[in-house]
Amino acid sequence: MADGMEPESSDSLRTFGAVVQALREHARLSREEFAPLVRYSKHTVASIEQGRRMPETAFVERADEALGNTGALRKAAPHLSRQPGLAAWFRQWARLEATAITLYTYECRLIPGLLQTEAYARTLFTNQLPPLGDEQIEAQWVARAERQRLLRERPNTAFGFILEEQLFLRRTGGVEVTRELIDHVLDLAELRNVEIQVMPLVRESHAGLDGPMQLLETPENRWFAYCEGQRGGQFISDAKEISVLQSRYARMRSQALSFEDSVSLLQRMRGAL
View 1 (cartoon, rainbow, N blue to C red):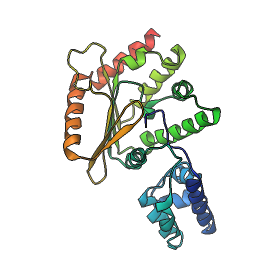
View 2: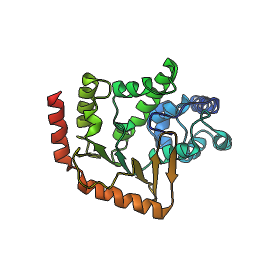
View 3: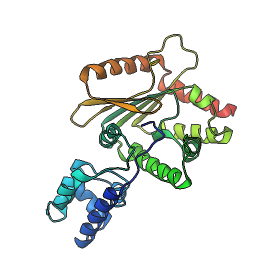
View 4: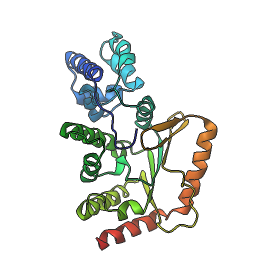
């Protein structure tokens, strides 16, 4: 799925979440009390209980144990699904992304979802074809905002972004949207776990001409990747393929502006608007 398509809820997710909430309340545990028991934030617990987030296997196991060890959640989890249309590879990627210790992104089409402002994201949603309804747009923004918590809730995860300079020069949504976007990206660049590099508009050699990519490392130090196109994406687990993408990303890091020079360029671009 393209980055404009976020996971949507489903009856099975909402039902599972309601059962988790009912069992938690029966155990007389608040979300604040329950969160440490499953080793997830209270925001993640809320998202799962509201059917907006696919629970990871670790959550299911810990929640079942903390809520009476009945086995009900373990038995229900394999039957969970999102709305039709969400590709299976994206569901798998989203689960890995939520626990990754390293996440690298190169993007040449649009600002990655983790870095988008609400105004920028809504511009993308409203211009999507086929057109989306108001409720669909709202649901997609809520899902994206939830996903963006990863940057601040996982301070030990290293996030790296290489962004083409043209993404800011395009002024998607207009000047005001672009000003806010650059301010937001500069703000995120101040986080210790976030590194942002800009690939300059004029570059005689470029290792990323085959398109955008994402690479992530799991807590078990396994690497996965995915690449997106117009109407679909490819989840990659083959070590040889990932090695090729890692080599390309490493080369792009040397070809892009340094972190300091990237911040300086964005500040100058912001001042010129």
